[in-house]
Image 1 (cartoon, rainbow, N blue to C red):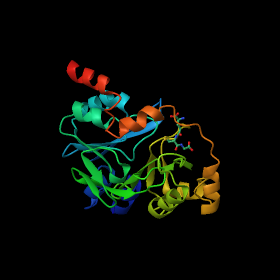
Image 2 (image 1 turned 180 degrees about the vertical axis):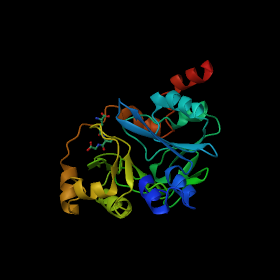
Image 3 (image 1 turned 90 degrees about the vertical axis):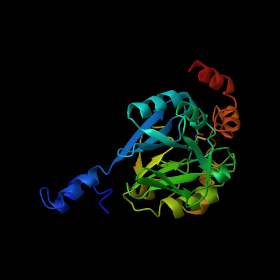
Image 4 (image 1 turned 135 degrees about the horizontal axis):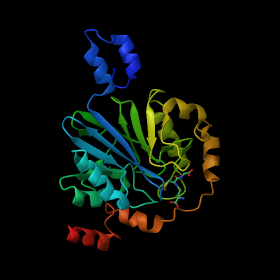
Amino acid sequence: TLGCMKLADAVTLLGKGGPFRHLATMARNNNFFFRQLFDSDSSTYTYLLGDTSSKEAVLIDPVIEHAERDATLIKDLGFKLVYSMNTHMHADHITGTGKLKSLLPGSKSVIGKASGAKADIHLVDGDIVKFGSHQLLASATPGHTNGCFTYISHEQCMAFTGDALLIRGCGRTDFQEGSSQTLYKSVHERIFTLPDHFTLYPAHDYKGLTATSVGEEKKYNPRLTKSLEEFVKIMDNLNLPYPRKIDESIPANRVCGLFLNKTLYIHNTLKR
Ligand SMILES: N[C@@H](CCC(=O)N[C@@H](CSS)C(=O)NCC(=O)O)C(=O)O
């Protein structure tokens, strides 16, 4: 596939003016739109993916405080949001999926079934999420929480790892349904088995990095390059403070982010 080949490589292979020149254009731009967005309070990345022909788009891991920002961007770009999806039930911020449903009527909220959270669509391992001519494979990667999913675009050679794999790190396993053994297995079996050149986009980065690759993490991840026994020991000794917003986030995220923000939500709805 030319889908995620670098443009320069595709042009060399196909010839600039040759009969297959349209394929080189396709390799650069096969109607796929991608934008990484950031919430500096929780260091959360939100991802907008779209089909520039059909105009269908999906949003991965929106944050409630940025729902208006995201809705405006989606409208400005002429996209129709079909799904606002979570990689898992977050503990550090309130999801924007519920609010986006009211800002962009017709969009549906999506989360893994094992999360126990409410949503319009509950994913199980192997489900496919379609937007226009593109699709994401929902690959179950539990361990940080039970319902964690990595969303994989084989066509674009990219994967959205949520908190399963962070850049040179991984999601903590000391609350919700955390299990270091399960997380290790998920990453090794579901993420490290992807081709080395696949770009990985996490749900967070706390050091200003934006993306990584399978090859890089297989080589440099200080936790997941270790044996299972060493990994478990590392995870048992992280001693991280609990996320500041855990007490409000988990109950709110069980209901698409609408619970504790009910007043704000109703207020905003009435304003429109
Ligand atoms: N300081 C932040 C929370 C930071 C944190 O615990 N991040 C989680 C993902 S969000 S639940 C994590 O898994 N971190 C792993 C790590 O190694 O940092 C806050 O107060 O919100």
